[in-house]
Length: 337
Ligand code: GDP
Ligand code: MN
Image (cartoon, rainbow, N blue to C red; front, side, top):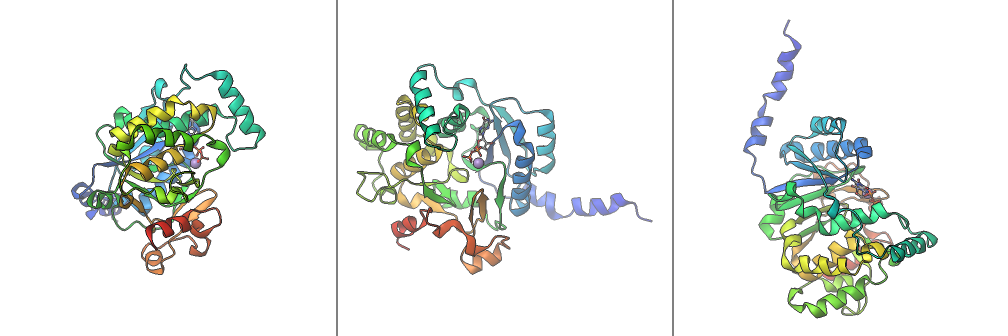
């Protein structure tokens, strides 16, 4: 009889590995920030990403953590990824609350948000994470050689086959920022953010793009923020945009105000407002065809053709897009749909 190895090698030696090696790829990587305790949920996210997209592309993964990853973590991740996996530790100065932050004021800010029942209101580590994702991840040594990234989190789901390469799409079309879910931010987490943004654009009008997406984020010409933002647990974006002068000046200015700690500014509104102001409106892209879920919300393609082509496992009738809390109506109106 033929040994089992024969059947295994049939699969391994089929077009797959050859195809991966010759595949045209963008200068891109997945980025995942995770704790060692996120092991199972990170493996599940990567497994789904591989099944729905990456097994046909072999893009690498960059895993970042404020602590060293365990050997067990690496072993489990290496087993599911088709591309190379790089593991990195976040340098302290990109993570911990800076010394110049007034701790009394930060404590009062946290107590206030706890009293207001705001999620993660009392958490310092959540604030570290938001500040890191806002201002530092793209400076990490492991990401220096990459331009494009797709952010993934533990415990997310990809509900449809991705039958195209979103990185090449972004690159070919000159896009800067891609999203699947947009919604309102809790006002309690960002009481002074918009005032700070306005202060910045007065100081640096040269950074504001001419055909920007301000109209998506403000209903009164920029006077007030309507709190619409892109949900940043999913992002496909250009790190050169974050590394460029406009965003670098913007983040330094926001950071100097201490709002990441005195309030609870999230990387989602910070990235969104920056993309909305410093990029051309056409450079922001809604990836309708990418079915995506991060508890408690799912984006499922409504277009029947897309849904079928993607062999989507999600129910389009339950898509978050036109939920009362979603900003998709706002987006449609803005882009003229
Ligand atoms: P939520 O999506 O806003 O509810 O926040 P999550 O708990 O999902 O955190 C967002 C991302 O940051 C996830 O990828 C987490 O794994 C990661 N993260 C959050 N806090 C920490 C932390 O203290 N250390 C590390 N290494 N990762 C964190
Ligand atoms: Mn999350």
